[in-house]
Length: 252
Image 1: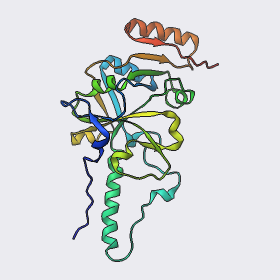
Image 2: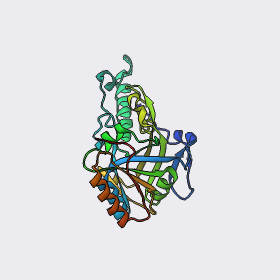
Image 3: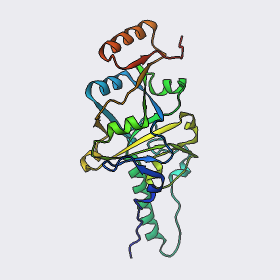
Image 4: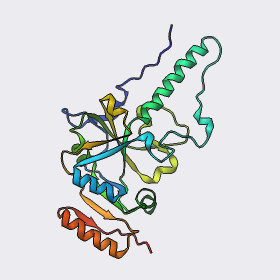
């Protein structure tokens, strides 16, 4: 008899609620829709969102962060243990197939990473917005989700849980886990799961926005005074309703 492992697709529902009965948007219980969230990114990304009313989201396995790709610093965590003797070979084959499937599902999700850390973070500026011209965009959990909900995808939003290296669980829980070393990021993560098989094969997808979601923009502290002045004038002229500010950090 073939050994199989079934993933319970309803196990996550006790921790989430559906934002609107009309859309497949699910929010972690206890996460307020008015929670302000921030994303450090490039000026190109900001202009793409504003000019095209689209939000491009990459697949997790395409992130440059090796941790997000499922890599392990200590290789002992890369191997799964199994039973020995008796029906062990058959069991192990099915179990390893199940484990690989769980990891693959987690890696194939489309992920958008945000932080609820209100004060500017020098390290996040350096990590996520230091190449070229960087910005920090602000919105709320509710505004972002409602702007994305009119897409043929399942959307999940939750705070990231920080675990020691080697943590393993269902693919769903793995979508919202990072190593303990990243805890200062205070991440809130949006996971999008396209229903279309062809879309799920893509490395990234543009999701249409039903309404604007950006409430304010902070310019990188690594820009010169003249660069900041030029950008402020240009962006204010093109997007007069957008709140654009200089960074509170000072970089010499």
